[in-house]
Length: 527
Image (spheres, rainbow, N blue to C red):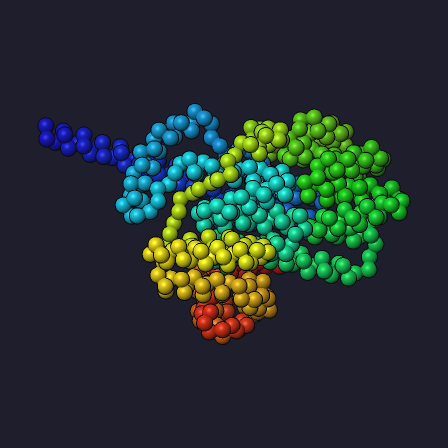
């Protein structure tokens, strides 16, 4: 009898453990859904989702042209895999709540014992709902609306990982609106405040992309070229407002039809990229009606199909585009688009927002679980003045928060001193990510030489490395270590790190101390 009782007890304990772990997995999945900025996985960047995928699409257009089927396929893939609601079916949602509720209660009891604030499921749901709205606007290229939502989230006390992810999305939206300075400052803030996170590492690459485009735009401004060529180059360089401007000037000169329809098409594409769908479709219709050669009419119909399937989600638009493309014998393109269009589910959120009712659906106050650690305090302070336009208010809030934390005993005088050092280090012009990157770029030719030397030895080598670089106040390197690597060659990695340890950055005051950055390096063989 005693043995039987022990067996039953063991089985009950095993069953509880299994259910607890299942619940824990689901809770963790819920948490991962918040990370809208989890935008690059361990695969090649062209296969990743979100922001990196969208920037990669822009790069492909520059390299292979607008008409490349691979570019269309990547665009369809990104839109399909990031479209639709992440909100589960109501029935499934209640089933999941039944077995995750005990797990959440247990975890909250543990948090209480540790002196931490409990996690509110309602607060989590509000955060997720508001982020879903922002991400919806971004997917549909309504960047101004998306920025408003992201600013609302950033003004709240949310988890650092969520804040970093939202800041990346906000920076992307500003870049698409040609607000490059704000975009760069936001990426720099992510790098400075969240250096040891994936978001911080990814922001280095996104900042690099924006700066490279900026340099090319500056060169374009100095070049003497036709309005048409300048407009097309601005389109490729993500400066859609200038592209629209120069195409409009060009079309007023009554160009030949062969260039007119091409200009109308690219003007439509520029309108499309900044979320002006009606203006874009109006330009496409002009091309479709006028282009007798069908070269640009075909491209315009392709864009109409993409808009109908992925952006506007209007069957009438996509059906008419399919009919026209079938006449152009472009069935393979239709099939490829339909393959990804079938993955897009109709969103009830789309209906609400497009009907203009979303403004009254969500509350204005969102409160997530708090964490009184020093890092979280720094994160909260770091979000008070993202644009640098309200410095006085930021200082006032900073002092108020300092006083509150010291009075309640949550921060010691030493903690406050460290907080001030970190903030001063972040604000120093010689420690801004864009300035640090100048030194990294200047020295990267050394790393390229080491890589090419390996290739000349007949060693096939390619991959990525994330290196942690500790910079002393005098600009020298205190240490450099490899955090992640896909190179598969320890000797090569050691040679790279050895070279980095000899770098010299600009010096700052000794009182600022060391700065540690995690920088991603990529090594690929040129074809």
